[in-house]
Length: 108
Ligand SMILES: [Zn+2]
Image (cartoon, rainbow, N blue to C red):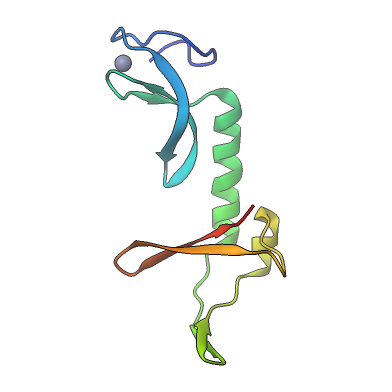
């Protein structure tokens, strides 16, 4: 893929390049994606975002034990989660990602 910085450009395959969310290294971030061949590239600002997310992922990765809280079960988040907007009182959405995996997303 070439000319990744500007919108409305053409991929080397002839397809149109669009900015859309894509999974890059497990992160859902904006990427330049060819609508024809699916080739994916990163705009410069997204590349910087990817570096930041890698660093946040490194800081937040821990092992926790599931706790009983009243009639529910729960896990605590590491303090580093505040760096990506997870703070006390923040509403979150929990969803099943796959067998043995759940995701926690800040609710806006
Ligand atoms: Zn293409």
